[in-house]
Amino acid sequence: MARTPSRMVELQTQAPPFTLPDTITGNNISYNDIKGAVATVVMFICNHCPFVVHVNSELVKLANDYKDKEVGFVAISANDVITHPDDGPEEMKRIARQLQYPFSYCYDESQETAKVYGAECTPDFFIYDKNNKLVYRGQLDDSRPGNDILVTGKDVRHALDCLINEEHIPGLQRPSIGCNIKWK
Image (cartoon, rainbow, N blue to C red):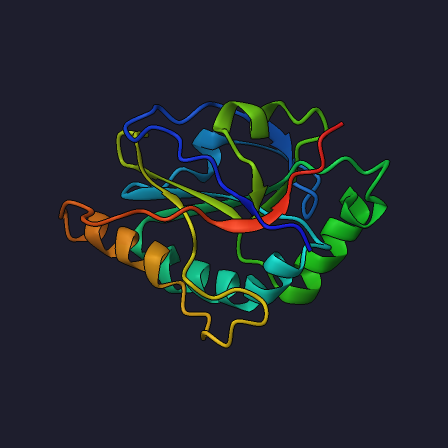
């Protein structure tokens, strides 16, 4: 299992616009469609990665816990489906329904969205403030498959709570670790 760290994109970077197909509804979704009034979480995930499988239930809980707090969420998969067919749109739709994702699960076939966001691994998290400026990038929490640390989402939750309470996000932001995005 590869252990690729996320690229620590410079804070205060403007959220790149995107329009991608949501595999759940079949509709095109843009950044503005999912943008939250307080914060927006852009997650790069996929179906097969053990690191994503390890945190999937927490992603659902996290989005459900914050959806009424004006936080928008979107998940994007950019993996090459030629080499990884389990990450294709039909399987994405099946997984999203099975796990009851409370967010759009978009397919980035061209991989351009992943590239402009600076995504490197799955899972990879980017949080933007109400002005669409990057305020957090990196890990969900310290848990990884096999390390016996409970999945809590504490790092992402802390960043979101700071935004909700209009506080500075202090401290070291640690890169996520996961499977590399399967580039074409």
